[in-house]
Amino acid sequence: MKGRIFKSTGSWYEVLAEDKKKYACRIRGKFRLDEKKESNPVAVGDYVMIELENEVGSITEILPRQNHILRQSVKKTGHASVLAANVDQVMLVATFKQPRTSWGFIDRFLVAAESFRIPQVLVFNKRDILTQDQLEELLPMLNRYESFGVATQVISAGFDSDISSVEKVLDGKTTLVAGHSGVGKSTLLNRLSPEIVQATGIISDFSDKGTHTTTFAEMFQLNEATFIIDTPGIKEWGLVDMEPQEISDYFPEMRDLRLNCKFGARCLHINEPKCAIIEAVEKNQIALSRYESYLSMALGMDNRK
Image 1: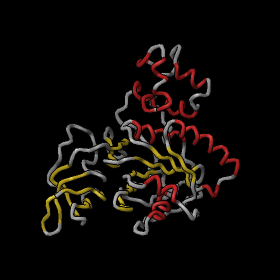
Image 2: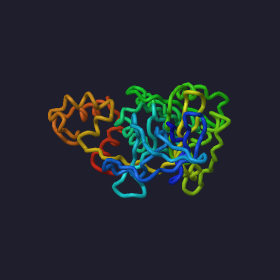
Image 3: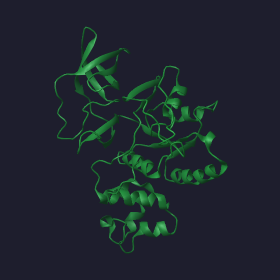
Image 4: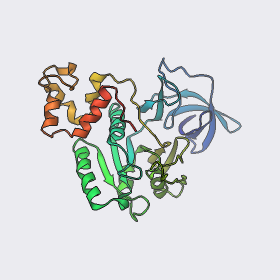
């Protein structure tokens, strides 16, 4: 029987099967990963085949994935962690303060999704605590992201009486929702459905960081065709298996311009002569913050947190 992984707790998986029932399942034997260094062979969102015995299931096969989104494993060096599979889009929940989400972290997340051609949504939460000056600083940056295809919103998940703008973006799709701990991700999810009861945490006065409230990735169904995948709060985002020469491909505002570089595909856009990317930065056609994010990735520097 075919099913889809709704929750992963490490050794047990919750699977929504074709009969509309959920079953606790375990993996039968070991799956070959075609030499891929992935720390979790089965991920939330995977379609699988299961066999049942006394209402307990065994996962016998992982069906081919449409896509998946990876980040560096925090537990196994050199391995990747699959956050979710078979998603239509990703939504990053961020905050301008309490805690502040760095543009470097945002760009790394977007680049990871863009590398699999997965559409991206960027939602800044906690609008209610922003001053007018802070809002005027944030909005031009979001307009930049909108200009190269990232959908953006600014909301107050805990205070807005109407969150239909978020519901509209999610409708009819499977969406991975991610963000730092403390950005209000769980508060937003709880607003979306009465069946979602995710624990919410508080912000530490000492560190200005949130406390982890989501432990395992889990999928929720909002209606017949709408699914959201909640993920544990992410402290940092490490890219997986990307060569420096390909990273500019995943910055949409750089992708076409790079063809005009003197050294073409060999150009790393760092200090090469007649580089179209550097010229665009100097003309403010590419945001300096985005270029700095690109450099940190291409040079192996760390601006993830």
